[in-house]
Image (tube, rainbow, N blue to C red; front, side):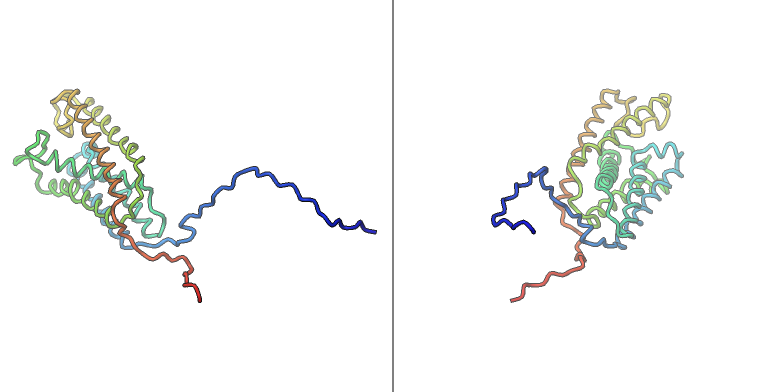
Length: 261
């Protein structure tokens, strides 16, 4: 015989919750398929070629060690490498590069253009490197124009017209200052290793410790550093206010229909 089934089943004790429920996040890439951007890839390859040509001309027209010591040449070289990676990702429909890397390359090439045109190329400033008798000519003028005008302008256009906005973060501005700080240390150490009075000892007149003294040189460097940080903050702010130049309909595999009835 079997035991009779009781009419009243006692309530089971509640199972204690051992952990809080964690929210589940689904990445957008799991829903929206990546999109190839061949036009952006081709335009970025043109920018890579422009920056690479500028660097090659600067190296060929001077000694490689002297040319590669310039901030402008280094920033163009970094821009070429970063833009090449961005072009490859746009062509193969992969996720874009981190904004920490692309923002840094954009900041440094913008610094190159602004410092040159506002301080070094203006004959009215005490830090000018050009005059009626020392202005570059021939291939030197071509290299100078590419380094300080064409590539900075093209990089800004790439950022404004081909790059999705709202990707930069304010917390990235401080780490971006590490490279200018490292370059300042390299700049001063390099000058100390060259004997006094040698041509090209100080590549930039505003940081010429032999002419202005270390106190004024460090003061100029501090002002430049603060200006660079302000420029980085401005780029981040503009990145969050510019309209999105990339507008395409995402293909998710399904389409929402209006309710029936």
